[in-house]
Image (cartoon, rainbow, N blue to C red; front, top):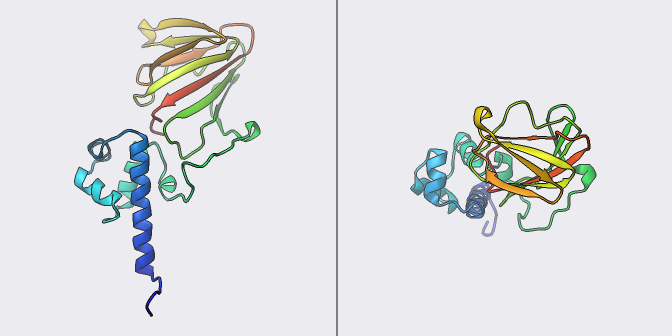
Length: 200
């Protein structure tokens, strides 16, 4: 019957929506078609066709695309509008695994868009871990909200030390090994702001 919305129509609509979301998140990340294609192991032509809803992708390819964009496959199919305001209550912040005496919370809600933000709390003597770590190659800003934090940047054998008081901030690349330590006798609270989001 004319006007019926069949399975093929629904599948085509889903493909178009998926492509539009991939394009929207790629644009938010300020990535070109060639950037996304190269990192996902696809051709720019394929990504272009996918974004326009003219082809479909395997689950494996969608996983690679989502990883490059800092998302999950589920995020690619989410019906939520990424431009709508989203409230996150302090009591609802997801807590990430950390070392003893340290607590780290994700503030920016998934799916991550242009940036990611974390809150960190460190008891005296606590740190982000015994070894410095890296994640992707993004711009990261560490802001000290309360107390005095020590940031070590660089490989352990040649790391530079920065003492930061409340209100101080420091900017660096996430590809540079870094480690936060509370070497004081008072609690420390910090914020990390990262743009663009780094792969999970």
